[in-house]
Amino acid sequence: MEDQILSRYAAALAPKNDTPLLDKLEKEARGRQIPIMQPDAMALLQHYIRLIKPKRILEIGTAVGYSAIKMALSSEIAQIYSIEREEEMYREAQANIKSFSLEDRIHVIKGDATKIAEDTGQYAPFDFIFIDAAKGQYQLFFEQYSPFLSQDGLIVTDNVLFRGLAADPERAESKRLRKLAEKINRYNEWLAAHPQFDSVFLTVGDGIAVSARK
Image (tube, rainbow, N blue to C red; front, side, top):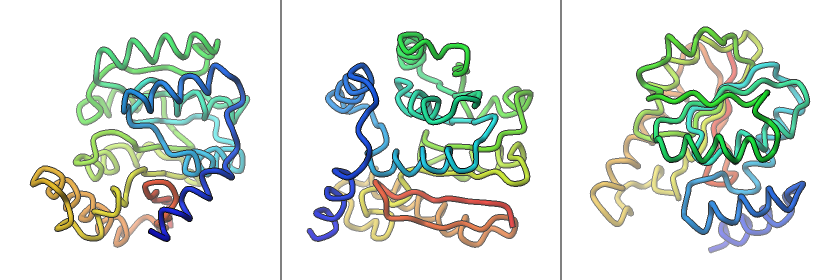
């Protein structure tokens, strides 16, 4: 209960959306239960982008384009390449990005991220990689795309706490959720022990992991 109060408090302090159009996009996505970052986690993501000033960003999981748009608005120079496998989400993201006149800086790649790493590598190196797609594939995403990270770049993984279930999968309400929580927990343990990356796990939003090369 206390954790929820603190989370709501932190979210309330997060910067508000820059425009009514962005606010509308966020409200519509949440109303349709489309998974987008929680406000405090999104604010931290933008903070990292402002600090490291990446020239190229890779996002795995576009959805409606909300995070990509927020990242683009945090940087005047970054070119963002975002992968989305669902046709409906791909088309919707394209339309939303165009409504913000960001189509020259946000490039949505249609495809399954587990299968198009080699093709996506043509846009590397990436100074910032954001993993926010199929949670059961997190380790595969990291293994496939981390070679494209620049030497001083960062990889951020969202939802690593998975509503707190990653720490205690047995609390899950269904077998499907329990298995997914177990996969995320295994990913977290694997990432924490990675021989080439240092990672920190933060209890912001639904939990994020920030990884940098050793």
